[in-house]
Image (tube, rainbow, N blue to C red):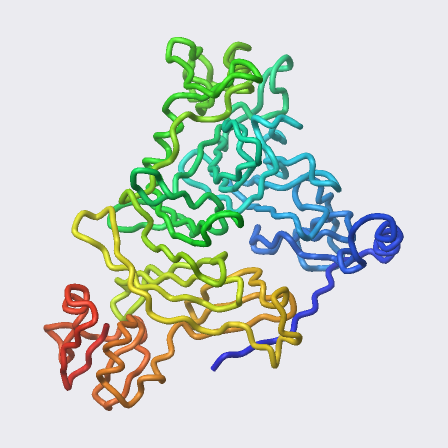
Length: 490
């Protein structure tokens, strides 16, 4: 059954700070609601929790939930305003964050701190590095940390602002530049545009990144799934695009992009104009430049003025895996279950909408290992007005969506409540085998007890068991049903 609980959290909020915040709220454009302590970072760290909160516009962090522990400043680790997006993760003993460092959210930053490595940040107030970014996620992969975000593009000559989606990366071993150039700043920061589009004579772009999966292994590839939408002034639509991490990394080995003057268009940098060693790369122990602090000024100046790559990151399979257009809502949240079904060999996407509903898709791989087709399974109401309070568009805004594998449920966070939903609703087809099979839900199967039941991982089904599987049959004959009196799993 669906369950919902009302949530109220207060965490090490200082009363004097809240009082000052309320005084400020009378003078600026926010209400007293923002003066509460909104938790923006929760990370597992050293068998404890590292938590950061806005703390009435005075962000603080603590590495344990015990009240006796010391707090550390949340500046550059947590935003001041709860409405500002941020990302954070621990890697190699350091905290990597993407956030803003000031009250007005003018100074966006990717920041490393709290470890043995020196604290580093991105260049301050440089639109070539950041222009009004909205951080979505951060991932560790190989020697790099990758940051996924959307921002206002600076490479297009338009009168209006154009939002695009990006991926940026930094080397975990970066030690910063020399005392002359990029001191205490990243020497490896590079970024590229993510291409999520429908091909054609004129590509139809989904420019706004809302969510990503973790980096997952699918058919021998490390991939990441991204949920994108069109801008508000375009044809309404959402899409799920998939990116191969190897292909993504190769884009950062390609050509750089530059604007020679404020009036000129952006063009690729000729190879002969790129200094040696190649800017933006990780230093290699034992090489001539084994530390970023020893790099020539020419290299440091180049990476400071050329953070943008010329090529875009291509989507896997040349088209989105899921497309939904002309809907009454946008899709803004996503989780992926790559171990769905009794054999843990099916992939199911759960996409959260701005109406508080969850759309469920089954991914069916093609024979070329790079593309998939999708089958829409169902749409489930997630918001519970009886337990979540007032039913309004604002109350239905989905703040986060999480998959709890141990309980086979989804956790939906709304502004006023937390809702738990089962990943499947097999009981809706409990007495009709035809309906059970037609649902194509990989979590469900027709059991020997003549009922449609949830199949737990490890349930024995296959041609050499007492049960018969129809996974391959359903994949080849979508919408058709193979009748059987034995256990049939989809």
